Image (cartoon, rainbow, N blue to C red; front, side, top):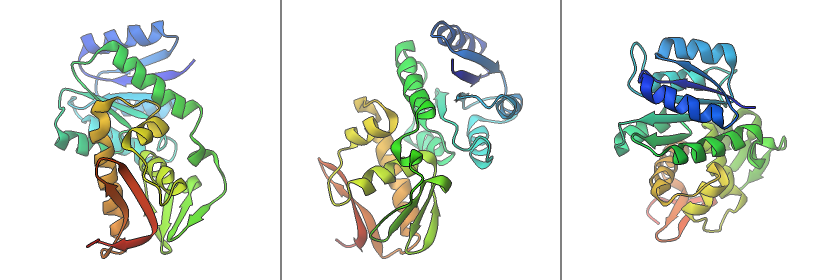
Length: 238
């Protein structure tokens, strides 16, 4: 049985989700505001957190950031539910460390798919986070234990999702990896409307990696194909 905490100030939605997840065999705890919700998360250490954005006292973005900053909870999967479905808000959510994003109103079946996928990642970690060994290729050294990529011996701290995406590209370095394949490998499903999420995460990865050497790129976009990692890097004017 998985333990899930829902933090949402909309009682009707909170109860609807709670009932449906309990019918699916999960233990579900709830909170109506961000401060109490974060305290509950620290106390219970759930397998998954479902967060609303707009809440009293502390918003969902802030709660997500605090989860990622705490060593006990930093790898905990976070699903954000919100009526704020713009790309700007999605970027803000991913910046805060959110794993997945579902816009209200949503279908319960879609919610269940997202929950199952995130719990699969939590219960059975992907190979990138299971392997104790350090992987080195080209300018990259991936350290799963700390979610760090060393690029030219400089540490680049990544979120769990960013690490998994980068690991997927490193494992297939030099090859083009379609966005749909990344969704399947990292999230466990591949709905076509989430391709934008991949673009956002790739953008974040590029920003972090290029801080090491602003003149060099490592992730190449293959238009109509996907993404390719060149571990030795290439000049930005390529």
